[in-house]
Image (cartoon, rainbow, N blue to C red; front, side, top):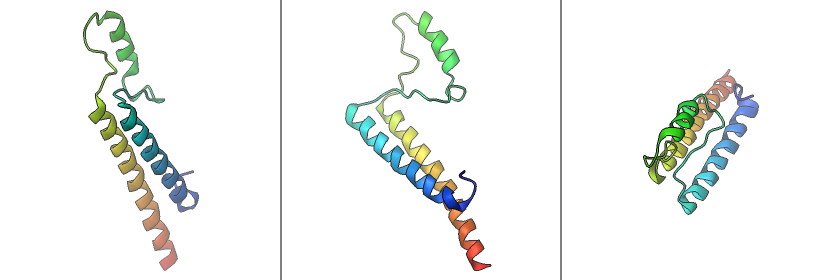
Length: 96
């Protein structure tokens, strides 16, 4: 229910806060891999197939610490953009 200002604005803030917390934990532990719960978006099917034949080659899920942090920045930025859209919609409704 993030397509209306109420409860969308608050929901997006909870998401942003959670992303910040997870990003801090990832940085503290040196996380270099992202496993998504949306495997259709992260090419997991092909990455899993690559695991079997990689030998000593690079691990297909290994991205590096910088890319993990960039992921969290992008996710927070996208959520904030959606939140701003709802805030604008809310303020326009208040003017009317």
